[in-house]
Amino acid sequence: MGFVVGVLVGAVIGAVVGYRPRGHAAAVGSGVLLGMLAWMAESLTLLPVLTGEPVTWALADAEATFPFLVGRLLYGALTGLGTHYLLAVLTRTKLASTGASVPPPTRRVVVLGGGFAGISTAQRLEHRLARRTDVEVTLVSDSNYLLFTPMLAEVAAGALQARHISAPVRALCPHTVFHQARVEAVDTDRQEVRLRRGDDHPPEVLHYDHLVVALGATANYRGLPGVAEHAFALKTLGDAIRLRNHVIGLLERADVEPDPVRRCRQLTFVVAGGGFAGAELIAELFDLVHDVRRYYPRIDPAELRFVLVHSRERILPELSRELADYALADLRLRGVEFALSARVAEMTEEEVLLSDGQRMPTCTLVWTAGNQPHPLVAELPGRHAGNDALAVTPTLQVRGVDNVWALGDCAAVPDVTSPGEFHPPTAQHALREGRTAADNIVAELDRKPAKPFRFRTIGLLVALGHQKGAAELRGRPFSGLLAWLLWRGTYLSKLPGAEKKIRVALDWTLDLFFSRDVVLTEARAVQPRPRVTSPEPDRTR
Image (cartoon, rainbow, N blue to C red):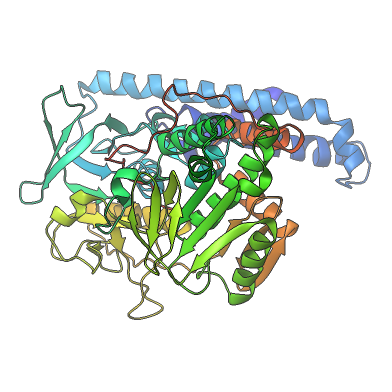
């Protein structure tokens, strides 16, 4: 029976999966699936029929034949891998006998950006072009990892380890040619991208047949005096680590500071922007400081001040008023202050000045109040939207330029179901835009019609710290502990790979029982972010 199963598994993999260069994982996965199906057909169906017993598919029957399941899974995996190598040998032998060789790729798709939109595009292209050798997929990004941005606030608050919310690009897109480099210019006439791997490296030129622009966004300080120089951003892992060290460093100083004026500045934390990022960050900073305060006995809780500045009359404008009011009331009850209908007008080393005249002595301002497309986007030809984002057609092609596609935070994607409206720049949209762009590029390569992007927002979630949150799923509101669990469950499931899921789950579990540490990982802890911030991967909600 085992030999028959092996032959069947190998035949199905050969007929359905076929030989794909570097397709080990697909072959093994198919073998495991077929092995499980064989166990179900053999142990739970065929064997009872042959012995005259009823076919019940009961849990007890499955438990009794569990060792056979393990054997069939291993057998299927090994058979799948063996079939892959057998097909590889046969393919090479056939090419050698005919004097032919695998031709080099004649066309290249270049993806700019390693955020959710760029990674999704590359992964989809890998899947769609798995059996083709005429097209090469290349991805260019200045970082070699995909950053899971919804959890940056928890990294800044010390609840998660930085490396646990990032995944290597090379592991996520194993069949894509990857260049860790900075994009300097794009020549759409010659269809070339100029990139540089470092300041001490000469520029390189990369030709493309189709270009996907998914460069994300950077912080927009709107030219406000002193904000770019003194404020912290929260866009990258480096930003989150730097902010955490800054906060811990301030607590170290304040614990021994005799001057009450300086002490007031050191213990006042201001966040600009009342959207998802701002609300989550102020809540996490509040939890961090109060969690570690026991290490600093000379700091009185009454001295701590947390302020959220927002230009509108209510925070979280993306959510319903009911949920926004709940979040506001909950944070206020815990001690967070709000400066609503006010904007940051200026920042110095000692204070933040608001548009309504308020002055807040502080050493800490975190900017989450505005973003703009990557600076390179504004230099590209074609039509642009009001915020300099690239204007694209419903099929995600840049208007006015051939063979260029744009998606994510740097594109204004029209909503075909609501004329005149645009899709929000969230990761749930960026992931699906990437798949649509990849499908349409393949359609263009095959001279087939492209399809418009269609998607309806599934839901919006925000964590408010202290095991509370707010969520809106298909118009249904959730708040409190249930919303917090929904937030964690949803984003945990979206982390790439089992390893990252397990590590983050362990971090969260330890955070429930142990206090966060106060180890400073940088010698100069109280420093703002560098003047130039890396582009932000597509925001996730």
